[in-house]
Amino acid sequence: MYIIPAIDILDGKVVRLREGDYNQKTVYDVSIAEMIDTYRSNGTEFIHIIDLNGAKGDFSNQAELFDIIRKTDMRVQYGGGIRTIKQVTDLLDAGIHRVIVGTQAITNPDFLKDLSTEVGKKYDYANRIVIAIDVLDEVIKYSGWMESSPIKLMDYVDKCLQLGFFRFLCTDINKDGKLGGAAVELYKKLLEHSPFIKLIASGGISSMADIEELANLDIRSVVVGKAIYENRISIDEIKQWNLKQMTSL
Image 1: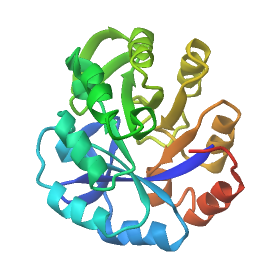
Image 2: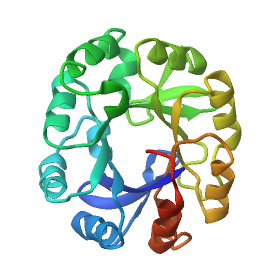
Image 3: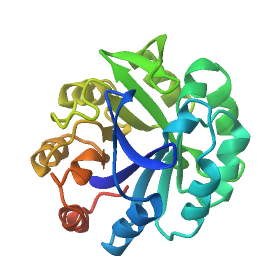
Image 4: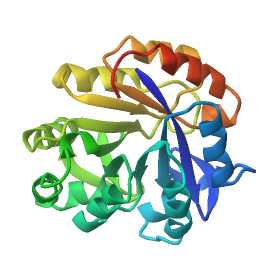
């Protein structure tokens, strides 16, 4: 299981939200470029970047973000407000390693089918596209976690799998930003339902003990953010952990 450090951006600043609430944010006194450089200089190969403004349809961060991303040789997993197939293909063409899609995949019945067709012409879409599943009490949330979907969680996973998507980023909103431990039971349910999915855990990680607990499950990777900024997990610990991992991202 690989640890992927996270950078969440809101209004051009590095932040972390609590339970996905934009009014409950912690702003960190570090620039986006400085955070990326810190990870890179410590041997990090893969980072997770979310544009929280983009998730709400405001793309004022994108020019700066893309300029910074183009200058790094790290692999980037990127999400936030991606609503069109062109956005996905443009991001992949620009060198983004993985693109996260959420809202459009939930609200537009044909989006994933069309995405698999169009992206599949040039890229291995099953590995380059990540399906975001943001969950609150097993209800799927979207549009920056402000809207609820009537689609049942496992039914949605099945639909994605039928279309050839098997890489999922699952965040338990109840856990997010609280440093209270990961959503182990939720991940167990998902893996029991579909043991062959490539699951990326997110939310609640507070310590290396939480990482070790997740490693006992068949989880492919885990996103860690606030625990790094709050000095609960050091970048060196992440580096040493990742060096030991033989599992492919």
